[in-house]
Image (tube, rainbow, N blue to C red):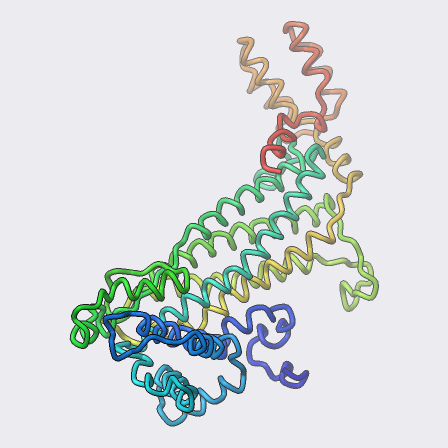
Length: 456
């Protein structure tokens, strides 16, 4: 796209953010869909010719196989434009691909096989496989960035495994933790959801107009059509054949994928909000970039825009993905076309997801820890030691320990002197008293650092 084209783009995915999403253009564009349709048609023709029982589809020479495969590997924008020109006449996108391939083989030794292009297929046999390949390829791009983000977060967690931080529950000071452990929580959550994404198996069908191989067995009753479909779906493209379908593959696997992706996105959104809050509290700062402006009127500001941009784009991503997951598995009887227009937006949901990941990844690279602010907040919150003190008192059977500490601390300012005086006054064993006396908000972090090690 030229700069003026970018300025006129209807969607920010192609306009403002287009340069960040180049990796998805070849996959989810109209070009990407047409190219994969050509790949499926060519693979089906090759499979038919490899089947001895399909006698009229003679075996291909190695040169002819190479030619068919080159149609795909060398498929260009000009080729896609030719398909679209044919479509302007046929008013049918998949039939246009069939005619395009017939054109390309008409002047070759493959010309006698023209009527085996798209043989016994319905459009959905080609489309569902093409969409499955788009989903597979697009999710690989996204998963690589997701893993880079998670690895970056894990490294940040490891670096700060023992950096004490006042926790906040209900927004109020709570038992201390470590910055590293709180980040490690998100590492574990993101990895779990990533595993759910990776477990989804993409299915496809190539079984004709209503899923029964009707035309296939009429023409060639002795061919094992299920095995031949597997040659294309599984062996050629690495997907799993769905045995039972109507005219359409029911898209359950796409719904499963997008539900899992939506959960991953939701965890990332939660991370964005927490980091935003830590920046607001001053626990985390952001490295400045020369030339950048934080506010049009307040020169001092360094806004957490990367995490805010990510949050906004995640909302858009999940809105699209959730709609697709709810809509795609639903079709009237053997088929309707409501899935067709929706499937064209797979790249929108994945595009906004990728954009969000890139924003968060950029933001993580600009973070710096404000050790002084963390220490200041901990030193101002000695009341959090009410928890370990009353817990030890409970262990020893002391009367009303919770109530005593509640009276001393709830809604009151507590400092080191007042807390240590209270501990000193307790009639408890020396070892317990010494352990409590040695505590401070900065050291009362349990096994947070070890928990980080288990993840990082």
